[in-house]
Image (tube, rainbow, N blue to C red):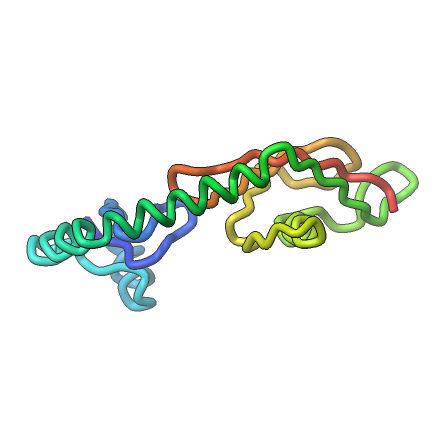
Length: 147
């Protein structure tokens, strides 16, 4: 089933993308929640016209994302957490803790834009990816230390 996304959906696509999904996922979740519409020929024409009119706005959004990425380049985070005697973390470090650490440094980043590939359950060095735009992402190294 071909649909047009009305907002960003994690692991599927970005706003105004035309994607193929299984019909159950589209009809039972994406369309009823307002995250997508069926990609009919008339909807595709409307999307093309809207994208043409918004091209310069999208360029500005991309430039803002690139500027934010330039500010985040070279940022290294240190996150202190409670650790057991064996070096394992009570719980895990996720995108919420990384977003809080970035906020302390003066970078307001929504936690939904931060992706941590593996579960961080031990002390050590890791990397997180901040997806600021569909074409702009920044890799931020962070270290987890004992509190």
